[in-house]
Picture 1: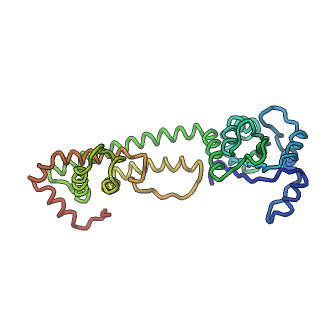
Picture 2: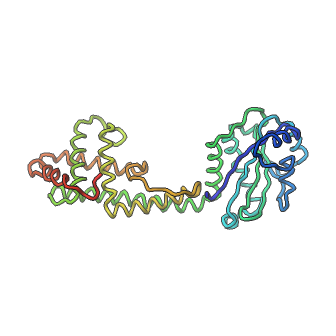
Picture 3: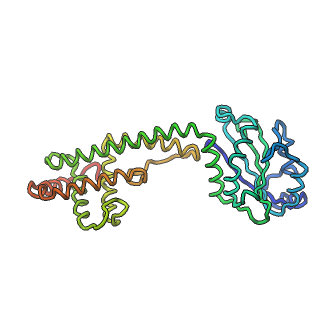
Amino acid sequence: MAKLIVKSPYIKGNGASGYLKYIGTREGVELLPSGYMEYMTKRPRSHGLFGDEDHVDMNAVMKELNECPGNIWTHIISLKRGDAERLGYDHAKAWMNLLRAHRNEIAEAMHIPPGDFRWYAASHNEGDHPHVHMMAWSAEPGQAYLSRGGIQKIKSALTNDIFMQEMLHIYEQKSASRDELVRQAREAMKTLISEMRQSIGDHPKVELLMITLADQLGAVSGKKKYGYLPKGVKKTVDKIVNQIERLPIIDACYQVWWEFQCQIEDFYSEKERRRPPLSQQKEFRTIKNVVIQEAKNIRMGAATFEDTGIAEKIEADALSPLPYDC
């Protein structure tokens, strides 16, 4: 379960009779006391209504709702008890400040201009999940629309604020682990090329792919950067990166980075994840360009390789089955 839970059902706002008709005809609907606004403010231990203004005239708001012909969204936003207490969201003021700070982002996610956005909320500091009920709608009929993507935008905006300090710390660690992985990949490539030139390499699969890439680059005009390469050449680069990933030091560095990445993603959705191949991580395109640069270096020294017979030796060795073959 994600650290912040956001649910966004909606009800019709065409007066008490329309609301009663709605709950009476919708199959499987959960029955609520008539008048959702009144329900929120009169629940035991409720902290009362709040909105853009400090003072809310509940009767005036209920009148506006009864006259509203469109949908009224009833966002329910909650935290685990431990997180709420640790981060200060076990009282109404924190929720009020949070929603006020992000009211325009919520309006945008619901496709409502800020000037037409109407909202009121009440906090409930109870049970294992302190939460806030937020009612939101547009002053203009037919204007509001909320998709799953919109709900995710609301959730992300609030999550980024609530857990900002914790996330910043993880991002710093993730950034450092990324830099270390790139550094180790550079060193691994330099070592590989050096061993190839001395005919002492023990990674024939990677070495053969590097020679293949060097040949492919000879037919490429323009910039020899990953983003500009033909699809077939990119495929070779990806294969090389995935082979490099299997080196113990690279695998270990990648795992550290991946664990930080999972911690960040867990703020939004906690689920089982499988680490994808390194070549699929867009954040590590630098490694791909390192591979390309080293292949260019090989091409510049192609005559030396041909004279010493290194290419033929690598190709022969690569024919033997290896535990890390693709």
